[in-house]
Image (cartoon, rainbow, N blue to C red; front, side, top):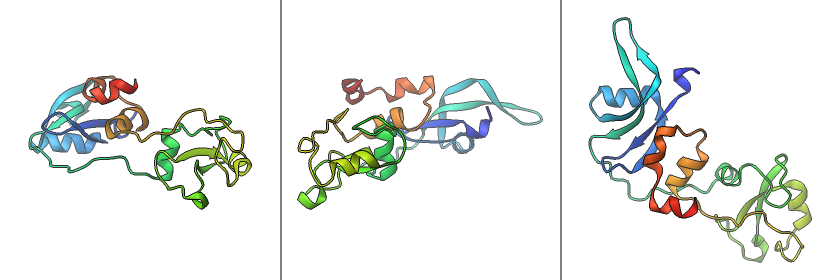
Length: 175
């Protein structure tokens, strides 16, 4: 695996997760004394001609960064990620689109609880009706993911040593 493809979890000064960044940015934050390393990758090291540095896996910012609200943006790709790129009616994973459970023509809004991933065939079959009106059953009830849950479950591969920093009461309820 190339070091350039590895990522690090960035925590605020109070240990709350902020984001995931590439190793180069994480190392730079540590090198400039803007962050400290909490966890390292035991397999890889950053090497120069004369030195070897630990590869950061989890870093914590030295100064607190005020973030008023950190939620997951409602986007097409984020709904697909939440639904594991799977039609929520039949389970196929190709020709995907978004479906409004309550159609917009009947007052349905574009929200986390009203949007699901659907294949084009199921979306056309459901048409301008609610799922129960068309005899279709959802595999899973849609929900709004929390930011920490989104980092943990939907941001790709999560390093084993990130998990203690991503486990909060909010997450343990859904797990």
